[in-house]
Length: 318
Length: 288
Image (cartoon, rainbow over all chains, first blue to last red; front, side, top):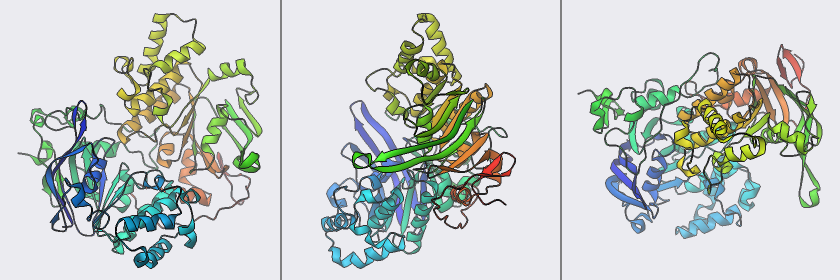
């Protein structure tokens, strides 16, 4: 197992108290696995990404463990994480492509970044050029300013930079979200290609778009209101989900071919709970058609079939 | 109801406006009452510019836009206000349409000053409640709240409610659901569909083919400012003729179908005239 997260809990400090943004996250990512992490705004997916790389100052590590390649990540210790970041765990944060320094040419920016990480730029120069060419970027891209690149080109540059040292785990946070469909496809396919070429060992791909994950992910982890709801192979989550939230979420997605006149899709009534003072028990309870008195206790996240785990009393029986 | 007649928009760019950037090139289509027309295109296709031209937020370079037979591109102040009583726009980012200092329902109050200053207080609040209910919002839950206390879906629905207060005939909806979560997205879509059944015309601007396909009667595919294909939605999506439309359709990620290999579509700079390929289906292709 490449990544093992066990009961990881991270809160945000706020004036009104702690926001329970990530609670008891437990899952594994195997070597070579692309795990899609899906969920709606505020479900904790970006919090999880940050927890695995760098906690913001207002984030508070509450408990749990994360083990990468057999070694525990000291995620509560910013300084101890320093040698691990970028080399072992690398992240493409949300909006990264819009965060390229506009006053530096791409090449100079990469050199500065590598030096800051203690890497001699010349030692990776040829590999950098090879990979930029591999993703279809023109040879002079290093001599250009970010403003001279399109969104898709910037996203490709960012992905090449973040995987340049062959990290074990890449966290890709909404890397396809701001792109056109054709560019989206190119970037998502590139992620699979990077895995196949062993530029990264495993990937956590965060997105709100399940249909992208259906294309590229091996497994999908669905989160709801800070907790994990379901994890299984991608086709299982898409075709035979077990958690009521996953079922309703997938049923609400229009696909090409589905027309309002023929089939009216339904959304999920209600809205997610406030995480400042989350309700006890299952957090989907208030919106769930299957909810019973038992749901006032948090259901365990347990395996209901090989490789398929669900946190729902209606599924786990007993 | 709304007709665009050979509409062209050229932006002046660079120092002293010396550079010319054609954003919309010779676009002709129409939106009827009770009809949803999807305007689909990628970034830079000119789809938002067309929305802005219809709403008179930016002047047109060439061509005509008619609403109910009247050319709206040259309207003066007063007739323009009357025009806005029939045609309203809602945009992508609901948060930017509100002033965070004021209550969210101030958008209704501003509208009242413009268009309903002679209406009594109780009559007005009845009207507001009615509009909110039409977009499935509970007035108690949204009135008197600040924008940050409401969700994106609620804010977006309030903007639709604001447009409904005017008893509009045409709604220009520019990417109105892109920022919403999947489970609330479909509610806003269904709302538009219900309003359409009551006779509202909607220009649904989107980059998302599956959303456009779900809701619209007719579809217009734009590329680099020009229409490459348009017609009945079922025909455009079911029997795409232009290679660009085919490429877009193949690139859409779908839940139940894996991506297939597609040929990249070379960028053709010349605008080819649209030809009819079947009834209510036109494409910029060679005559079959």
